[in-house]
Image (tube, rainbow, N blue to C red):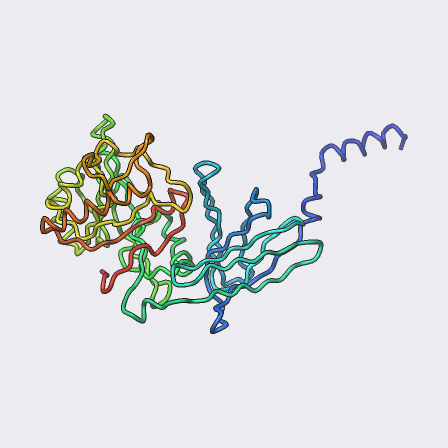
Length: 363
């Protein structure tokens, strides 16, 4: 072989071969999450962030029976949610050498745990302990998220990792008037009608419908939303009319959730549909900056000084007060709705969270 031919072959190989340096230098982080008191492995939500805050990484389960589901949502640089929900099994993550912060959370009954680690050229093993500060189920209270936008197949993992006793995914989502819910199927798989038990105390109620009307026919026109929770079969009716949908939902033993306090037709949904639940907190409340300042600002009670606004619209406190004031007003009118909440996890940069807690609330 001539020297020129050899140089050409070597040059071609250098040009086309992928850069494997990142894989060669990658080092494994291995870990487990345990209850600080019992020592048992726990399902939980795990964040892995570089020490400079610039990058996020995701873990995987190292057990064949385990599961790890990545959630990666960002609205802008200030509103991000990047985590992995892990089953109660050991985990691992491939990380380049450097310093990292691990943050672990599980629902509202465990304190947040953080741990700094440094990865070099050898595997690093960590055990993160979560300390429980209260047990609400022992007191007869159970957690739930009544507004989730995730594939049903993911939710057994999520229910356990987030310690959600009940999860309600919006398996059908209607945004145009007079549209049958079947047209708004979110998950292409058949929707189960029976509850799915992740374990004896954590259940997914799979068949639910969100009517969230943003268009009247082809015309953009926001009306409002109501959630039908725990239905037994498809609803074969669009909306409006409101009363007919409510009657069919009642026939199936479903609950009606008002969804949000500021819609144009919220004052109608409550008395006409006789809603069971009122979202005292809702999916506009994030851990990051308040994002929807001008949303439905035209429906604000302008003569109520407790509903705080600024030049951009609602402040976060003002938005919360708007919901509370609306709830108290409806209670004073004789409308009895239990307070609840939902996150719209799956759409927004938020995690599924036990924001709604009630005694004896079930299907």
